[in-house]
Structures are given as C-alpha cells and as structure tokens.
Image (cartoon, rainbow, N blue to C red; front, side, top):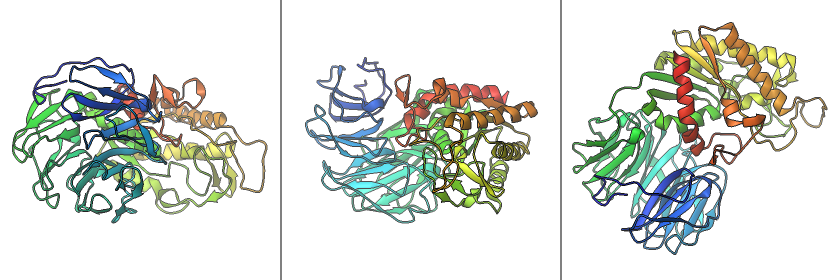
Length: 508
C-alpha cells in the first residue's frame, strides 16, 4: 500500500495464498483485488485490511476495473466476466466462453471493452451485461497474436499486445483499426490513457511508447530499464507509474519526457536468448512465462506454430478430443512443402539463440496419416517416424552452434478414449494417453542420449502432470487453460522460476 503516489510502499496481509493478478480502486481506501481460482478480495476504509468475498467462478481472474462508485468488472480464463454493482460485496457472472480475457477497460460504468489472447475476438458491452464481439479489421490475419492491455477514456480506446501489436477504437470498442506498422518489435503488456489524446504503453525490454494524438502516432521514450514492464497507470495526463519484473518501478511527471527508476533490479541485457518452438502450447509457455524471464537472465522468443508440432500430414482429431474425423495437415504441418523445418531455420538465423526449447506435444499425441497408414504414438511405425522428426529439428536448431533442451509432454484433458482409426471404423488396441505420452518422452530421452553435447531434456511433463495424470491445479494455482490443453496465464507465472533454473542449467 502507498499513500504518496507510489514513492514508498508498505506490505499488507491478505486472506489468501492464491496469486493475485489485478487490482482496482473505486475510491481512496476502497479497492478490489482478483486472482487465481476466482479469488476476489475487497478492502474498505483505507486501513489496509482485506477480506475475501464469494466469487461466482473458480477460473483464474486476470484483471479488474472499477469505472464507477459501485461498479466493478473482473475478467479471466474461460472468457469469464464477473460484475458487481455494490462496490464488490456481491458478484455475478455475466459472460463465459472459451479463451482467455487478459484485460478490461471502461469508458463509463456500463460501456466496457475486454481484450483476449486472440486479437480477433475482442469484446465490448453497452450495458455491462451483454457482451458482443468487436469488428476487428485484419483480425483474421493477426489472430495468433494476444492482446494484453486496454485503456478507454470515454469512447476512445487503445489496446496493445504481442509483437508490438496496437489497435484503436473511437466508438467504445465495437470497431477496431490496427496501428500499422507496429509501434515496437517488443510485446506490449500495458496501456493507460488519462485523456482521449494522451496514452502510454509499456512492454518487454523496458519499452515505453507515448502518443499525444489518440494513438495515431507514437514515439519511444529513452529506455531506463531492461526489465519487462507489465503494467502502467496514469492518475493525471503528466504523471505515470509503470511496474514490472524484478520489482521494477519507473515513473515520470512528464509523459513524453524523461522517466526515472524508483525501484528494481539493476539493468543489463539478459544473458541467455531462448527460442521456444512447438505448437500453440509452446506459444502459451513463451508468452506467459516470458513476461518475468528477464529477471532471471533469460529472454524467451516465441517461435510457436499454432496447430502444428513436429508430426506432419493429416491428423485424427484435436488434442484432448476423441473425434475420429480426419483433418488435412495445413501450413507448416502440411505433408508437402517447406513446413516447420523452414520456419525453424529462419528463426535460428534471425534470432541466433543460445538455446532452443523444443516443446513436444500436445498436437503430436494425435493419430497421424504417415506413409499411407494411420499410426499413433506408442506404435512402432509412428515412433520411428517421430524420432526422425525430432532429430531433424535438433539438427536445424543446433546448426548455428546453439544447444537444445527438449521438454517432455504434459497430459491433456481428454473428452473420451483415444481413437487410432477414422470413423466409422473401430479399433480396440489404440494406445492410451499414458502410452502416447510415454512414447514421445522416450524418444526425447533417446535423442538426448544420442547427442549429449547438444541436447538435454527438461521434464516439463512431470512438473505439469504430477503422478502421471492431468491436473487443473498445482500448489493452489490453476496451471492449465479452460480448454484443458494449453498453459494458463497463472500457470506461466507459476512455472517460470522452475523453468528458468532448468534453462540456465541446460545452457551450461
């Protein structure tokens, strides 16, 4: 808690051990905090005491805003939006669906905008209850990029996200236009607009960008920290405070001028550059764990290919699905064409990583059409094919002299018994999920044994699937997303310190 605009702080005790991800204040001394497992805390009277209130969800809540004297909205995993109209005492769920809602902002007590982990599906509401999909120009092209932060002043809104992505809306969030070219090559995690024309956005590698014309043009502020800045607030049009990894706090009394470090670790470029490759699970790992990686001397570069891991060609169902309908392999996972080898080659040439993190699964748990037959992990034909694919990936990723760490496969939440032949055919000898996971992990260890100077294994699967089975929560943290396949945002925060320690060891 701070009573002097953030220059000094005092610790407060709270009635929960869950991670807390967002906080907002209705007035001086009256605040709401939200976090993992649907946690909602309220504070009254300015004495620093907090109490836990009943929440209508057990999904992780990632952000909260309080646009009125009694109205607050919190958002999170599973497309959840919960609302209160009495200052935080009673809450009700007003929206749910697949996906992750990363941020929310309101131009009035009932007109709000929510941004998601898919830039194609931003949401807005005109009454605080009914949430509608926004119209996003070029959204389908940019759908793989997450939007992490949003700020609204009246009907003027700005949202920011991965790879420096930024969009503007002048109608309260129903229609968005992307700012092109990208303002920054680095991910942007937070934005604050104290007026319709003045905005500040912060992100990876100490990035701070500002605008004086509502987001039409932006300028970079000289870097004062190399840490990741995750959030920013501007109580006035000139005074702003940003926070980030390593306890970093930076502030300014002149938004477009000089910023000063108020607290935090020493600056300095991260020692280890890590290219993270794999499917969309790898994407969530790089995205969510990577926010705090600079504090550990690590930079994670997201090279994940959504819907595509190492196995190529037609696939039988999605990860976690028992469907028996074949789907043609496409993009980098098409049977023919340059495929993911070309993408990995380009990534290595461009990023020159010290270490590549080769994240196996979950797409490779599915049955594939290989050499004219449907085969599954745990069957000899698939395992021989997959070992060749892993070896090819290792050779590409180490061609520039770097090393590779292969991660083992976490279990996924399945909807029924695995299938290994298309419908309407049936088979009684399909490998189980345990047999599939064990087969892929065995291949990872075999390739590492064959290449001891270049390859090591990080047992990520065991960390996320203790006792060899799927679990939603570990150490009180919801570690998996609502789809039961991907890593959750809290899961990325939780696994980061463990992962970075293993990355440092693997680089040595």
